[in-house]
Image 1: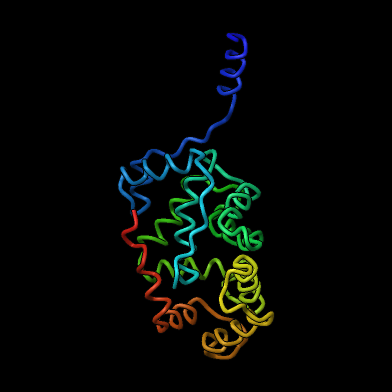
Image 2: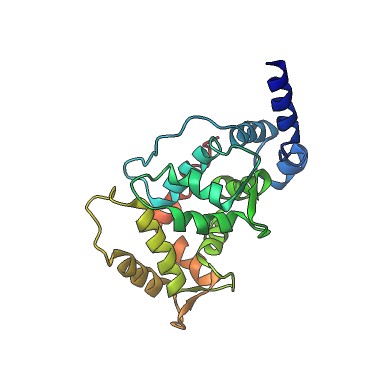
Length: 228
């Protein structure tokens, strides 16, 4: 038995575990306190029970996603996740649908240095914006999510790809049940409002201006400001 324990100890010591940057540095780079960062890291690093997907009644997509990102901190088994692990964890929140494509887009939004992994630092910097950022910062982050090819514009096709991914993720849990062409109709409506000069693309300025005039979007951005 002692031999087995020794082998396990050696394997554990050989496992490369990510260590976060000094908390003081991360505290300076985010809008979280040192104590909040310690709590978040403990959850990000350790594995707990599989959470029950929580979609509060009347919850819009923005606030539901923030809620599930917070649950995500309780499911990451190490300090760094690759895309496959991110998708696997995220799928637990939406068992009734297929979250693979949306999780891919979300992963790319957090993986700002495009190295194929989301570290605790990456996650915290994104979460800090979504929870504690200004309206401008939150909308910039959202724009980056929709700008799939990162060329500084959102096309109708990119918006449709994101919208389809959201509808696929929600699965059959919506009521009333959505029609098959609902994502395209949704995009047509939004794009018409956002593309002010009708040039076929939405710029960051057009995106921010349109979102700021939408009461539902503005309200949803305030729901989780004091969640931690």
